[in-house]
Image (cartoon, rainbow, N blue to C red; front, side, top):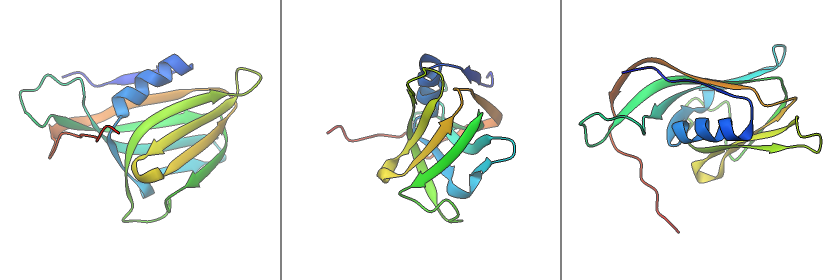
Length: 144
């Protein structure tokens, strides 16, 4: 099984990363902003939607995602310092500013939590960090 390594430099690339991290489980304390490096990073247990494993519940993999050239980070709908805080990542989107280069990246979590990054330009990297394990359940969402 090959480890996933992806780079996003535009909205289309980011949509691919977003699809791969949909339903990832993230602890609030496993994300943070390194202001001096202008980098926002998070660790997650992502659900491997592309796995052809014979398990009916699928696989999860530990992965890291980071965004470079970040100027500001804002959290809403959850306490980023809560050690017991666990979030389910639903999507990642990019909204360009008028200049077409800078803009905002929004990480949307189930239950209404969001992280908004103001970026100089879009630059994100996703990489798997280790072996896969059997998922305890396959993610499912009610369609409204």
